[in-house]
Length: 344
Image 1 (cartoon, one colour):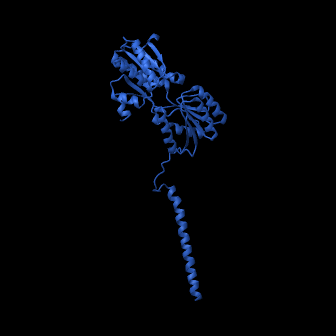
Image 2: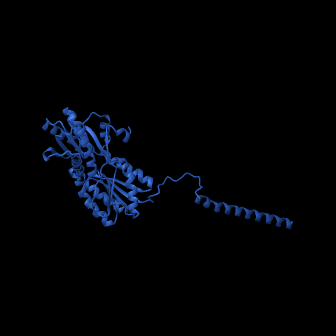
Image 3: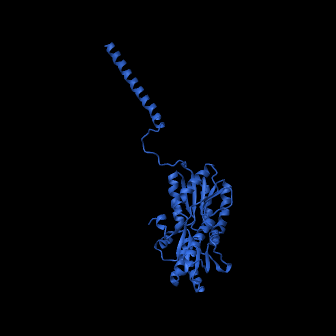
């Protein structure tokens, strides 16, 4: 009996040892298999520049504007993709809200601020606030001069030159090079950066050999207000009844829609050629349909802003010191190419 018990005990110990050795063998093989790249599990969807839970504050100008709304959606989509925690606030186009939102986000310990507004004077105060906390920032389409701030958005002057060249081609091909007047509709409150969109148009025309005297150039404001632009357009057409070759360059899409409505109401669609910046869905629809005064628009692709801004933010937070100036792509959209650029 004693020998039998000893034999059973020996067998039991042997079984335990074998099980332990088997477990050790399995655990030692797993890391080797993963390290060799032979793991057949689903690959991770996280990008190489994973945001590691960085906290980014985003102050948006006003979601009632289509362009800024699309930018906001793109920012959130890419923040989620890159693992960035995005705190969204909206200023409602109010300067004081922009400043108070900056204070609130800084108190929450953000790693970086992204600001989208068209008020340069307010940004000066925002720079003071972010610098005091040592927090870097990115300005969208509006750039303060500061070492701690980066820029992403339109290359305003170059976008103007591109529009000017496209307009010059139209004037030459459709009007035999004749141009009676140039109307430039800007947004004075946005400062000199946005005004460059209009100045660039003049250079684009001049580069094509179309030179205008000062009394042929007319400056207007309110490119972001379709109703005001329509009223200004109606007044201009009434005051220039004999002009048959009127080029209108608008710094933003709503102004183009407004002036176009004025040409339709006046029955003078063929007398006017409108080129604008920042095509929105309304401008896209008009260009796609054709037969209006809106001939072309320089696309800024707000739906792609987040694709560039979020990785830029990650790079800045990591201390990689990327380029200060970063621009979106610019392409002139016309009736001929709109379906290939923006499929309906």
